[in-house]
Image 1 (cartoon, one colour):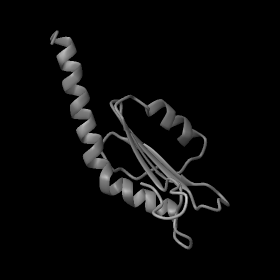
Image 2 (cartoon, one colour; image 1 turned 120 degrees about the vertical axis):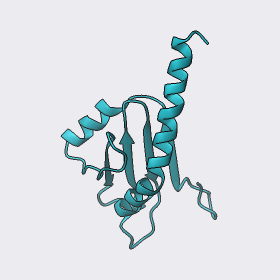
Image 3 (cartoon, rainbow, N blue to C red; image 1 turned 180 degrees about the vertical axis):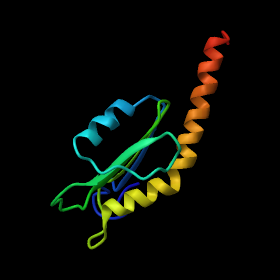
Length: 116
């Protein structure tokens, strides 16, 4: 999603990747990133806002052994809690997108095993 006026800077990016990112997420959690609450059973994640960022940027990542979903708010609204905003967005879209990606990945893996 891009800013509607001016130079059309990127405001929001949602990325779904059908790969196992759990080790990378664990590394971020081990380094002190705040964990996401349980959004999808078996998934792990974290979120954070850039400290002292003039754009109020914030990020959230949710991962399973089959997929990773990231929400990147590059330009938050002044006066709002951008970390809470990406957390709310992840709670809203995470369950559906991660579940769909896992189903797609399972079907693809099954097709390869069956020689299709």
